Image 1 (cartoon, rainbow, N blue to C red):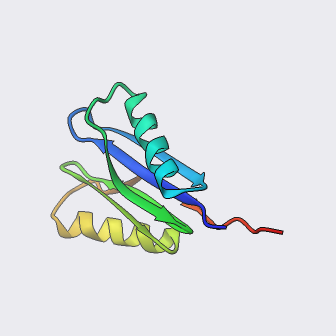
Image 2 (cartoon, rainbow, N blue to C red):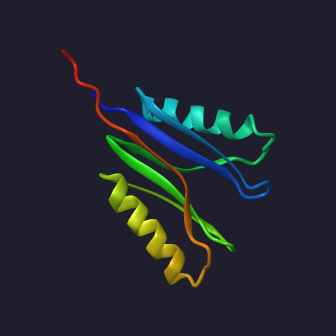
Length: 105
């Protein structure tokens, strides 16, 4: 059974929210938005929703990027590359998580 996750951010406050292992896309998005709003952020928006894979947020001194892919290694490598290619400095993984499928018996 598919499991969903999402990452939401608020560019005004720099806050973010995340969810993992949710049963639906809508549930993952709503949980990520609720997590973001709980951190006193008013303008949260979902940046990525993913299922049966992993997501990461990479931040630098100037900007952030969020992505999802099949494996955590792949999404982290891509996020760091995007950060470095943009000329940003101090690129690092701020958040990462996976929502892998749940076996039904």
